[in-house]
Image (tube, helix red, strand yellow):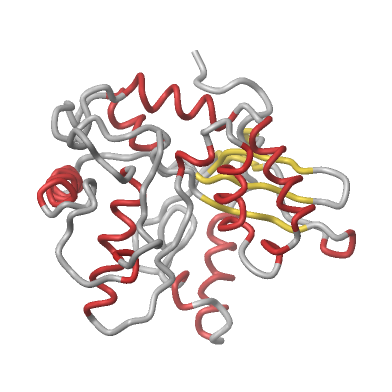
Length: 269
């Protein structure tokens, strides 16, 4: 039984590929790399592997054709991308917690950057605001999603907020995350299909195409999670650090911007 009803995910269709299409596409990618056109963070990433001579040949027969969410900028359209992350609190969070799992992890990450002398924008989306059913709280999250200067357009903020509050994706994700992982990272069986599905749903991407007359939201980027290659150990270590170092409770050591009066990060379920 599918997890999502029709129209919630980015549309996809299984198609049969023409012969040698993957090889030709990878040839193009290699050419773009050699000419310096391809972005550095995309280099060495290819379709179904690298078909260079001497490498393993991987001739794919099928692929998914995805719905095109590319905005038509000439019509005033633009695309927003964000991850809703943990829409329910981690079952392992201590009693009396002040921060959701997402905000706790974000601040821990930025604390390390600050210690290295880097300037960071430590504020970000609180997933609990997105699913609060409180329009003013949801607007706070939407402003982070829009970013400046769009976040200063109150009419636009209101339109996107109403659209996200009215779409089914957030409530479905919240319910699935809660039901599939009731024990949390420290208590779950990391090989179970349910737990790994929950972790996958905590990292999928929202694609929101905004036009002057419409707001269209889809879910995509379902990178199936696995506890292999040390990932399970990483999840456990991270969760324990969030607990033991006080990131959930707001008692972490350090003189950080968010520790100043009036700037504290306190999440509400």
